[in-house]
Image (cartoon, rainbow, N blue to C red):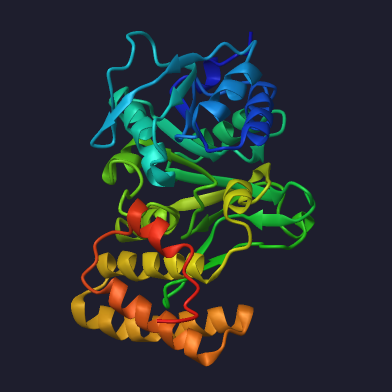
Length: 345
């Protein structure tokens, strides 16, 4: 039996959606890695029975406790009685989005008093000793409540995909070490960061409780940027642990479902940011920032795809109109916007 005693107040949440092969590889790597968190919660985010049946079959031998909970107000209702430690599989009835899928499990962890709660993408693979190494760093530096490991490309494990990063004044983030050789950076120690990705995010229960989990104002994306802005507003330190690393297959689920990221998905990204930043800036400074950011967004989109000027004008008008007095970007918004081409009014 895997020794879990060093990691006894740690809950790990792995969210999956329509991706059985990578999810099983992730879970197997977790259980093969050595000491693991006391609670491992795999959350299927409404994939449907055609996906969950082979997922359950693939977990044979690991024997998860299976739950089909009702979700009300972002919390599980009617869970079967019993301990929440060990391996559990939660089958959601609908796709709640990234934040909405993780939040019921995060809040379950908060309700049960876990000191550490970690979210992990299902298209990752962890190496032997990963959790023990990360926990050792956490215990050595108790003044830092939020951590990320070095995240490497799965198909190029010599290159860094993400090692945290830094928020910028213009409303973007700059990744630390992105696409650079792993050997260019330290093998030990840590570095403070101001941006931390949701791909692999470990935080204390006290930090998660500040926002009761991730912001559920955004169905797709933006949750890690909002989380990082919350850390900044509360002067909370986050850091990358140079001694811990894992591999990431990078947005596999989304790309399989939507194909090449088009202008509609770009619009969702920038609309999320416009709505998010309204929370963190005052009225006048937000209006000044918004004007600058719209120009910045237009340049980014044009530079990547060289869209014609009429398309770019319609794109900017859309963002300006949609972001006015908006508090959230919901699932209905996501489904409506993601396929837009802006080729005509």
